[in-house]
Length: 197
Image (cartoon, rainbow, N blue to C red; front, side, top):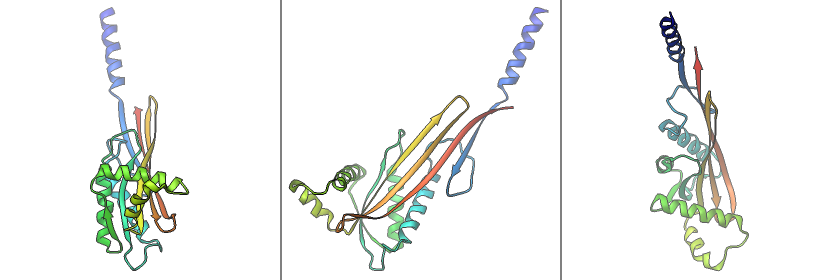
């Protein structure tokens, strides 16, 4: 009888644990919901972000009909995970060029883009540029605008669910006036929950 009780208990445990399912729900604040396998950054995030940002920029009055020269130094990854920001930057750059509304200057590689982005952050925070940086600043003057951005995230998790909220920001800086002429934000939220039935 004791042996039978142990078998019944084991069967009950297996039945219960077998009912645990993990459901991944992808939520994009600018699109309809769809199901994906992970809360991590994915290919569809690259596509939706590039399309939204480029459309927003090109429809802004700051982009006139004279095809301004824009230096694009890429997207900086400030999340806790590895994100191929070059892929996103390449898609944004390609769409801008294909629009024929702007002329695009770009840095030689992704590493240089990240260094230049950091330098530009410092320049924007200072009211004056040191003499030793003046030569670097003059090299940027060959373009009218500087386009740069970053990806940040908020990640939360517990025993039943985990979520990631991504924020992608893109900015257009005017070298002549030291103004940020345009900026936009793309929000992507993803949630992954475990349910029992």
